Amino acid sequence: MKNLFEHTSSPWIRYSSYEYRTAEDGTLYIVVSADAKPEMYNPMKDAESLVLDAVNIGLQVMHKAPEDELKSMVLRFINSYGFLGFMTALPTTAEFITYESVYLPKNHFIKEESLSTESYLDYFYPFDKMDFHKKGVESSWSVSDKDGIAIALATGKNPQAVTMSFQKEYAERYDWLVKEFSDWAFTFTTSFLYYMDYDSLDEQTKKLYRQGMSAFGGISPTYHISLAENAPVIVWNFHSLLVMIQMCFSFMLTDSDCDMKLCKHCGRAFIASRKGNEFCSPKCKNQYNVYKTRAKKNKTDE
Figure 1 (cartoon, rainbow, N blue to C red):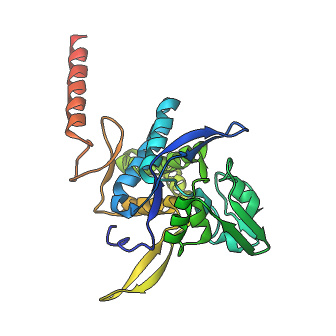
Figure 2 (figure 1 turned 120 degrees about the vertical axis):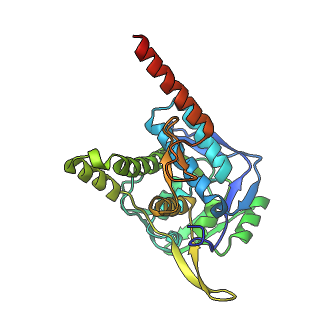
Figure 3 (figure 1 turned 30 degrees about the vertical axis):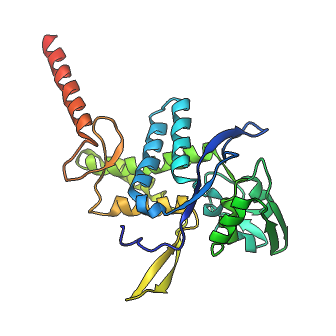
């Protein structure tokens, strides 16, 4: 997988601090903290950790973890990696600014198939609005913040919407983030349990598993061919962290050399260092054996 995605068109932006903020309608968002500073980084260098962290948050959602714990985990994820970039992941193209309207395939978050650009942007700028103007397919926007200008210059080759999503005014809904994480966890759990229990499943149950997996999918990243020093290479254009995670996750699930598993003790997703490894750490293995021994002893005492 690392070789496959060795070349990407641009890094991602994360800020030094994020926080929760509630809109007037009661919707909970994550926003960039007022004094936060932007940082450019390459998420592909931590692709496996990024995917595992996302899936493990989703597993906690599935396990009905306390809301305060979930909020803490989601905020910690955003602080580590930045926003998922829903704004550029949901439309049919990240270049939606250049169209008269924003066109959306079916998704879990917005029911409308098309929206005006201004109405669509309202989902992501619920507090402070961008200085954005549009008439037909023509649009303009400006930024006066020093950090915002630096980001615009550094990411100028990206679609305009990507650069706009890196500005401090941008925000993402907490419930959308939780839903996306839980969808990834459901996909992983379905795949893992299907093969673990394959011999004991009846055909109807197998069919349900396969139907559940077939629902997983999304917008694929675009790419272009670049003439590198020795040979042409594929350069992937990940215009949202969400699409990057989903693409890497898909390859991790299907890569025979990447043994992604659920820990038999703590239930967390992990990459097994060798075949047959059922625990994410020696600690989990020891605790599992201790609890198993105690259970046997208690049963014997009865």
